[in-house]
Image (tube, rainbow, N blue to C red; front, top):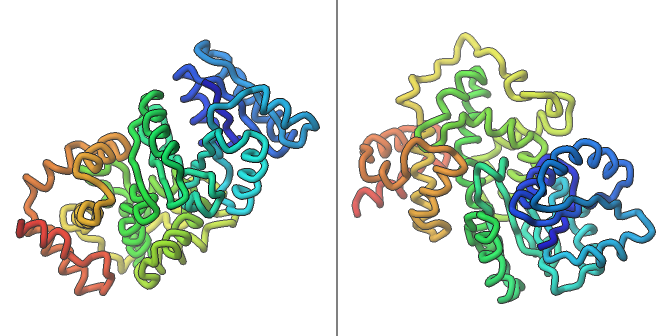
Length: 359
């Protein structure tokens, strides 16, 4: 099998090396000749140590680019460029015109609907590092062909990826599970909490990483674009996420956002007036459970999928289904109700867990 990967960033490299280890030949493509040469210098040693497949590199500004793409005979194309809609659209136009409509065109975008990129595009959203998470969100839309709906889940399984199948209304559900937790983290930071303490209390047994660590791992600029796109596309209550958008926008596109650990640097120390409650009293765990139950009720996920997501992506200590069977749901309802009354933020509304407890 032959796979073209458009992009030279961290995810493009990670996806390509993963595919090579699965025996898939990879052609990395960039729009810049200088960038692809620099990328080749950095990656050729790693790629050269994988004997199951071969690696090739190509710049789209080479005069014989189209001929080289056709001679590579790709079975699929995965775009993993920066979160810029125009760049993604332009890349899709060029590559689909060269490769033809019979070659599946996939986008690793974490926030743009595939139909906004190109009608021939299907979302194929990976989670870093791919070799550990082993999951991919496959996002279909109204124009998705039946052949793509059949082939792509089979393809994912053939390279040892667990596919999570989604439609437009459930797109990017795994990332969206964390939005209320990220907003709550920034609310506590804005109240004067230290990044270290907020990171500590935002980790729990269904997500072994604190939210500050997770947000910085994703990247401030990428996360800012994703959050603003989610609010717009899914018509989320803007007031609920204003603190998150404001916090990210204050760092995005600045030197602070580009440096390592930008949130930790900006919110290093707590104010004297800040009184963050003990970890066991914080709302992050009930909030996450409430959001998962809500997404299951909306049929974005099955219970089995949430178990897999928590295990493979968030490295949970136990299954989500075990939490619902063994935890005090009454405690969760009380915490969420108290936070709902205190803040007025709708994502604290305890109705999903309350309704589940009645079942």
